[in-house]
Length: 124
Image (cartoon, rainbow, N blue to C red; front, side):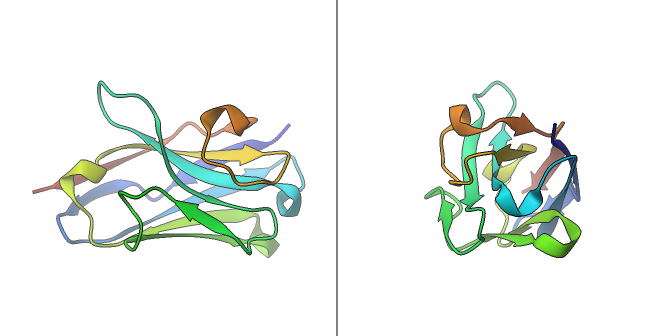
């Protein structure tokens, strides 16, 4: 059973930056495809970014492409999301997810494990 713990959320101003971290335990990190999703108040959870098990391929939603970067640090079992040029519409709870198949897909249904989430608030 894989456990995921996110950190790094907080309050940022428009145009600012934050870096989210997700530490994985209880599984083989190098075999996992991983992703970030987010959920704004009153809205459905949506895909943000994903990375394959090897870390060689990434996928981004159109809304964050060019501003966010997803990466994996395999020796320390940690997934990152570097968020730059933040906008108020980036506000929400950000969730880390892991996929046993390793594909790093965009669909929520592909993911086997989820973290508890970390709040990101971007002020205008």
